[in-house]
Amino acid sequence: MDNAMIDPGKDGPESPRRMRGELLRVLLVEDDADLAEELMVTLRAKGFAVDHASDYARACAMGDGHVYDAALLDLGLPDGSGHQLLARWREQGCDMPVLIMTARGGWTDKVAGFEAGADDYIVKPFVARELEFRLMAQIRRARRAGRTRETCGRLGYDPVLGEFDLDGAYLDLTAFEWRILTALMLRKGTLVARSTLLESIYEDGTEPSPGSLEVTIGRLRHKIGRDLIRTVRGRGYSLGGDGH
Image 1 (cartoon, rainbow, N blue to C red):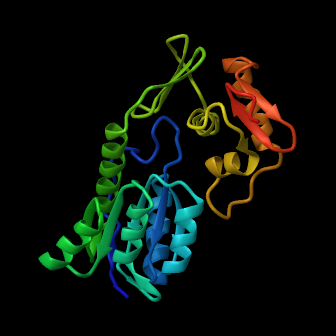
Image 2: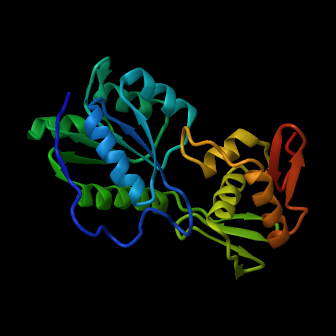
């Protein structure tokens, strides 16, 4: 187990945790309960949605079942190594940014981390503000590398700027509307389960407000047109397709 104290610093960078209202999702893999709690409190206060795995098995399950913008990975896990977990993700084609955080600061340790597929490496103890800057830098870099403008009829989406437009005009959306529309756009033409859409609004373990999804879908239809979002009763929604 890698122990560390983190310094929360003072004011962090200006609201970088959301891109045009998007809730940025981070997987934290850390077996030190105190440090994990400290990091979750710090990152959530900055607007990140943070899911926590305390061991290798849980991290595998969460990595396989969810889509994250980035991962923070401790190397010393009780039932496996962070290097093994990272190598597994990369072998499966998972290209999310991974930032290793560990007390192992030697050059050979860093080389091993980068060779396993890490995007960045921070040594404990660290300042929370630096971790936040590095995390956002990796998320932005990953998005620029995979930048492809998405369209669906009159609707357009820039994944780096995090902006939607309708007939070329900027579309003003609330945070919940943005998250739902992004989830639908990235899976356009296919059925998106109601549970998947709720995950795009709420953090892991957070109880959804009754009817929140339906209310948000209704507002989106008012803004972009009713025909773009189709309901598959009892199953979910699709954007620009029949969902079957």
